[in-house]
Image (cartoon, rainbow, N blue to C red; front, side, top):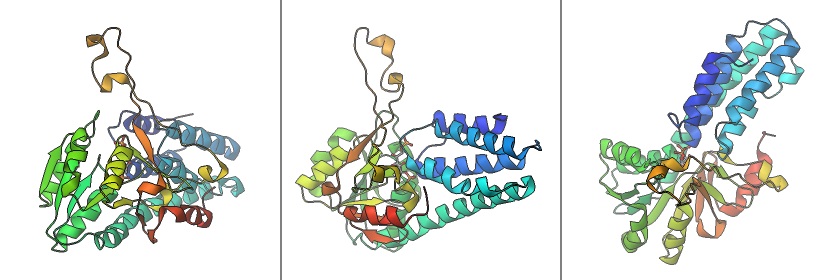
Length: 303
Ligand code: RUB
């Protein structure tokens, strides 16, 4: 039985009112906590079934970001062993709070570590809107480094607009460019800084569509690519060979379909950047080579 608040949270994620891998993970954890605390039934078996149903509803909202799957797994970890409703409520609620707190502090640690790799005078490129990438860039600026940023528009949803506003508000000199201008500006760029929705066990990074094109241009121009990603964005499933599902969204996000009769439209919203095009992944546990992703996943307590 799905309640209204949980459905509301699911809708916010589905419609992208709340978006970005970290934010959707935290909202899902919070929604599961609220669902648990407001649960009125007295049958423990039914409660667990309803929790699983609630988890599945949240999971169905956006398929690509493993942050969502991992957050829900963390919050519901060990519920099968609990046989008292009050204790189960306490456990789920504490796990959700703990996940949210850790996720927020991971962001600060990533910014601290990642910003050290940005040098005074650097020109950066970022894509879409990643809280981990933006925090890292802002930290470098706050540390007194004289940096400049090219931020892509990030079609079709133009999340780049959020990024440029956040960066300019923090005082970072920022230039908005269209996605196709990336190769043109790359000769003036020192580093690409992006986030991740999912990191696969082979070190491939799944992020907003166009990230792999930017990484390819950076590779050609010998510009390093730094990915900022909390460890809960690493995918355990990929270790067992599962492929990351790439979300395809409504084609009307690109153009109004009625204006293009007879034209096929296609709107994949993420892509995979191969590890060869990534220099480092900055996590809250430190800086790793993409080839060490497997080790991070092996050490994770998420199944
Ligand atoms: C957002 C996106 C971001 C990652 C990382 O895509 O691709 O780069 O989610 O973000 P969408 P963060 O707008 O489709 O959700 O670092 O904030 O988790």
